[in-house]
Amino acid sequence: MNAHSNNIVRRDLSDLTPAQLMKLERQIARKHSGDFPWLMVIWPFANLVCWLALWPLVLTGTVPLWAGFLIATVNLSLVYLPTHDAQHDIIARPGQKLRWLNELIGHATSWMIIYPFNVLRVTHLDHHKHANDPKLDPDYTSHAPGPWSAIWRTLTERQPNGKRGGDYLEALERAGRKDLILMAIVYKLGFLAILFALAWSGFALEAFFLWWLPYHIAITYLTFFLSWAPHHPGTRQGRYHDTRSWKSAVGNIGSMGMQFHIVHHLHPYIPLDRTPAAYREMRPILKARGCDLGEM
Amino acid sequence: MEKILTLILKSLPLIFAFGFLVPVFTQGIDAIGWVPPFGISSLVFAIIVAGIWGLIAQIRGSWI
Image 1 (cartoon, chains in turn red, orange):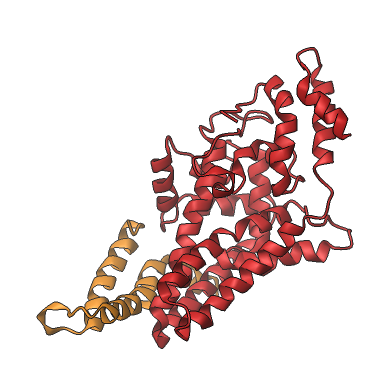
Image 2 (image 1 turned 60 degrees about the horizontal axis):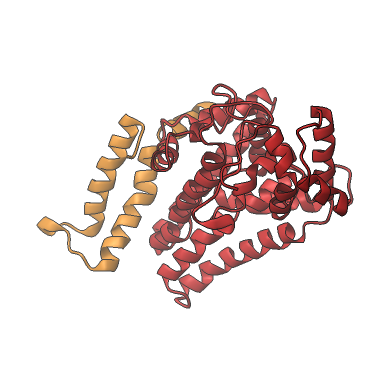
């Protein structure tokens, strides 16, 4: 399979039919999926333990609050991606032996960014289904003409009159999961209740710098790199046109692997850490399909 | 239950202002050692600032 795939990379594909291109694309995708994604199992629990440990360390003065704030911001920025792989059943599909682990990864960590796991899953799968559709893509509100306006928009969309929350509720309704709306409200009010309790117990600054502010920085960062950048300009729809590959100024790790987001939309069962290799092999096929490959 | 929940959700800017911003401002002022003007306490100052900001956010639908 490996040698065959390398041949695909080197040869001219212009003579192949769409069906033949699809067959080759699927062969490469299968090659990069199926292995147990250890990274996505260790990452979420290490991140969760690190963030939880910050609280006693900061409250007892072992770690200064400024350092706790920096670490917490990294922690909360790292929450989403393992849940994202779990949303796509990459750790284990329904019916498989380790299915419980897939679900545990999602449920055990998504609360840190104030989302029930199943809300993330339903709305994200809806995004895949309707990417760049102004009416049906629940992430459409992250679209913006440039990077600064994208950052500003993610802030304005989180305001009480923002449209994004309503788009997520509509996606849940379309999926027949109205039950998750109440769950989302419970998470939000629970978050506020914890913040208020900490604040009025004399730990307002700790609550602010270890959760509230890191949460908002993380959501801004995540929306920018996971939603705006890989879909920009977001004017086209369809399998090979609703996302792109792009060169990030902060590199692949700094942009959380999203330079190769096009591979994820085409084959969402490929683990995050395998998308760069899959992209490199698929590139001639994607080029033949007329994808926006940027400078990658 | 639904009416109470709706009322809470609609009033979140004001609830957030008094539930979180007031203690954050109070403890922030005390932490940096700043003394509010006109002899008012840090708590009263925080209630005034957070209350006004929360009220504006409540009416405008935006904190920024």
